[in-house]
Amino acid sequence: MPKKAKVEEKEEPEAAVETKEENEFSIENLPRIGPKGLQKLQEAGYNDLRDLARISPKELADACEITEATARNYILKAGETTGIGNFRTAEEASERQKSKETITTGSKMLNELLGGGVKTQEITEAYGAFSSGKSQLGFQLAVNVQMPKEKGGLNSQCVFIDTEGTFSAERVSQLAEARGLDPKKVLRNILVARALHSDHQVMLIDKVREMVKEKQIKLIIIDSLTSLFRVDFSGRGELAPRQQKLNKHIHELQMLAEDYNIAVYVTNQVMARPDMMFGDPTTHVGGHIVGHGTGVRMYLRKSKQSMRIARLIDSPSLPEGEAVFKVTDKGVTD
Image 1: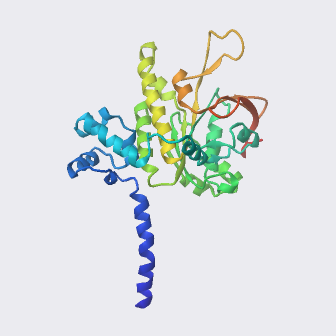
Image 2 (image 1 turned 60 degrees about the vertical axis):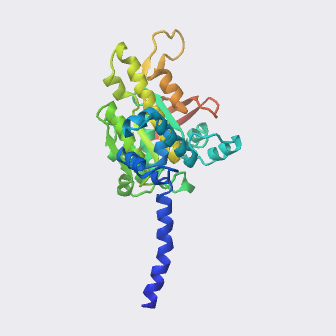
């Protein structure tokens, strides 16, 4: 009996710590809110202060059937509690940037081009023609993120949103074996969803926001970002609504990356620019919306045999440059 009592005393503090961590961003921690207001937020699906801090007053007012003034007050209080959307010193912003983590691509040259690898809190876009290595890099990252930190991974799970039917469990298993990992375990740690249309793609990101609160997810892959938007919004008359919807989708991805310290890797299609008289006429799909929304942009193109060339087109902190890497049976390498 004494021994049993001792075990119970040891377990109680651990359970209390877990509960505290889980409830840190609970909507119940919103300051100065009454039971009726709390009930309305919960019935509308707002259970996390980080989600509440990101929404617009009008959207919250419509969802909860409250005034915009009340909605604005809730959002401000959520921002004050979480620190989202508030002023901070440049020094604090610098510390936040230091918390970014990197996932190795498998190639030292490509890692150097990207400042160490694919980073959390950022959207990394790779665009290029068919067989340029975009999807292969995505498969490689899905495996690498599961490796220990000392080997360039984050010891975490991955979400893969497949919009074109490109996901290959067989290829992922092959890459896992090449890294000395258990293929079955690697596949279990990749959560795959086949997006059916652009609305479904947007809804899947909403599901991911809930999943990251329960699972150790550090990487989101969308292959590809724009294909379903091009299908659902065809013709010049549909360009404006397509870009507006795509802009909001990219914004949600960026907020998700920042809120939960997650890396986002997206592939993108290309098209030819008929107005280009000189140089490579190939350009990415999505225009300025995608260009401004993604943080790091790479243009991939195929070279001789298994060689690929990556050109860094845009980054807020890295210079333009090129890296040569290979895509072999064993994956992405130098």
